Image (cartoon, rainbow, N blue to C red; front, side):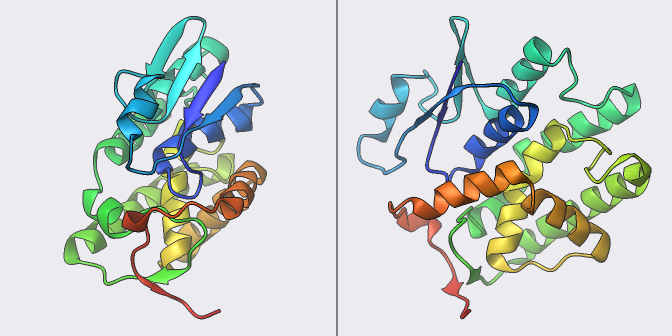
Length: 219
């Protein structure tokens, strides 16, 4: 099994399946591709017709798109346990994951993932609505499932992988959350595998100017 990813400092889409594979302990070969603009499509199309990361290469198959990869891993290697086993929880987990996958465009645009940085940005009304909606999703899931564990649906699931890049964005840009959501944010941010990702991101030296938004916070 091979997982093709982009720069760890910047590639939010790559983080999601990477985190799932690391959390469940499935071994894989990591292939990292620079996301610098020059020749990017050519570099990526050698792995996938989409010309994007992440890409999973397994058993002669090529699977692209972060959510599709997570679904494949859950079905092929976890007997579906990448999602909650309760049908109602599973439906909700898929719903909030799909919402993350296809939405929150203002937040993505104005607060690009940049693990190494600590920045302030001017947040538009649209981005604030995205943040408020994420706060609502987290608090609703955590309220309903708090007795089963610290993750959105009690136990770790694909839903947590989908929101992990948001956690890193909130840390980078100093977004304040409710106490309940802060506990969840700390659970994700303190995960040993996410810390492994962050440690690797901090050693990267490539700069992608489009992701270097905002003003540095003095520390």
